[in-house]
Length: 362
Image (cartoon, rainbow, N blue to C red; front, side, top):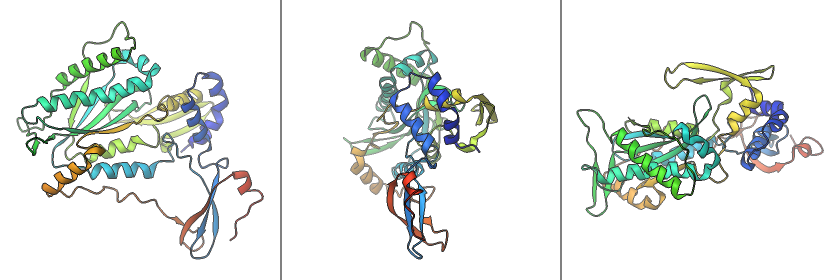
């Protein structure tokens, strides 16, 4: 396994010389990935309750594109989503931006990414209100992804949606039954047609210029995912911690970086090797604009509907799954001497100061 920080340190100078038009968010990510939990990062002091042993611990960078960080935040997000589960069949829907529109998305990321998320939800909400079995307030969890498993640029939105609505006027809870013995939500071709119209209209209203040629037929994938928990775990895995795990970086030599990925069609592991500078670009091109929210909840899963959802769960006598991986509690730091719990007593100490003039007791 190769450390991403070591790869950044190896190729940073060459990368910055080759890629000069970087966004501030990408430069910040590069700096964070370079220093995370290395001798260059600030440190904190942990002290043992039992034997008073003190130890230096490197700070994590906390960047959402770092494979070391945000694990606790990922668990917290998953726990919140699982506590909102309702008794219905869930579906995973994927709305993909056509290749011809990707250059526009890259140039206008904040606008197009926001349109992708909003238009996909508006499409599903329209279908839910018009569906004979539903006709009510629907809900969904949306997550924006910008990469393929090969790490190429490929903006798309995953939506996890229960086949159910709340009719607030009649105070009814409605779920959609299966079709011909199979779970069914909406027709994927009809969804794609409406999504296409909404997104193109949104781009025009934003004052952006569409390319001269783009496909008439777009792609929306619809897949039944049972109770929805496994789909949420999948989304949570890629919500934080960047687009690659360090265990998948298998070599860095002779100016080349090699990593592995699972082919989405064959499910077989594949190998990709490319120059170190290009590898860093594959990582940094997926850094979102500062402050952009990758995940959003809609309908009765939105934070504004918390009381409504709680009432629904109470009336249906539903005890939602608390979590699949235990409560999201930060793991304790164990003392290397006695095994007792260690507590942080001081933070943000410059590394030069920590390992220079200052020496903790113990």
